[in-house]
Image 1 (cartoon, helix red, strand yellow):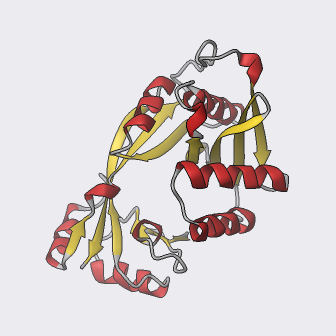
Image 2 (cartoon, one colour):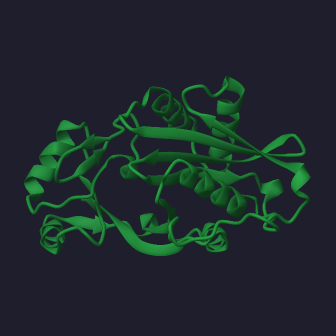
Length: 242
């Protein structure tokens, strides 16, 4: 992630996936500069995320320049205000609590077995290919950002890994990503339970907000978010230059 005062650029040139190579959080009107910075970051196909804070004039420039909306990549960003929410996990699981355990690991000292279990569940549940998993493993093991903490949450059911979640915490805000539940364990409310657990961990560390994003088309994930108390905040739209 390359951060400027007026934008961010997420760049993974080794992967030909648009949403992993895009400019975001843009606050300026200079489309030429945005494209120049993307090119310098190794992005060959100009790709931009638009959110409610993006200047409307920039979107007008993009449409004139041939950028096209990618509707299948529309994200819904959800949020949980930890100052206003009473966090409770009692009775949310549809199975005895004694059969479910949660492991919480810092990415700095996670055992290799737990890391591989996380990557395996993430790959299967989010339909990621081996190249993307390899890049994710590299990012997790090398990412060093001042003031940020990365935690891996793993749920076991009767001693078997069943679900995963990555929790990044920085500047009082936590972000949930790379989450999923193996098919044989779905319908037991494990993921809503894990989201609440992640919120509790964030609050214990002094965090104020928890956010997450899900594709608009992912109905099951939205249901889990509703059960966890996360409200819909805004949508983010991906545009690619043709």
